[in-house]
Length: 198
Image 1 (cartoon, rainbow, N blue to C red):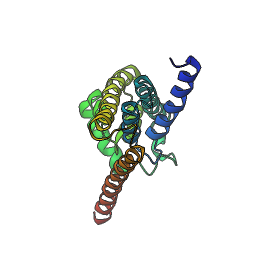
Image 2 (image 1 turned 45 degrees about the horizontal axis):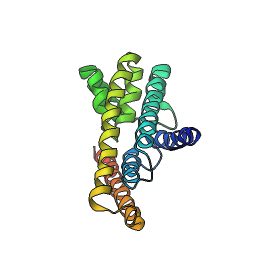
Image 3 (image 1 turned 135 degrees about the vertical axis):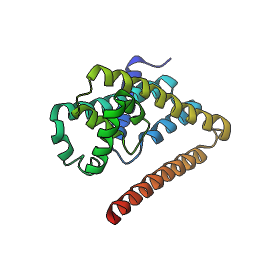
Image 4 (image 1 turned 90 degrees about the vertical axis):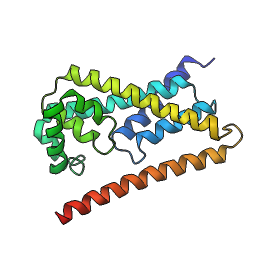
């Protein structure tokens, strides 16, 4: 049985990693959740230490973005750390979706890696009620964490004998991470080229 202090320490550490990923650390949060699921399958991490910190980190990061928008209003779009993400084109797109769909746009935004930052900050700036945003985001976060951790569990239990093939686990995790980074990079390049042509 794990010591309570150790559990709290693990939750804090893993939660911090998820928070950093969700706020823009180079490794996407999806990779972190997938990796956590693989570790659970390998019996290297209890399920609760994959799910609870994941939920906490993601929910905290989304809340920070929302309240930044709510507090600063349109000024949030000029913050140095967010300026490259909150382009005028993306903000206009987010505003139109939020005006049209309200809370549903916030819910869907949790599933859109390239646009969630724009949607959450714009939601705050446009005055979406905090309790509505928090409820919708919490529901979406539960789905996201459950799906990605479950995918990691499935990978670990069906394709890898996790306790005997540590190198294979590492290779698979690196491959998936590189694949997602390449996809994200290609999408950004295509978006940038499209803007330059227009």
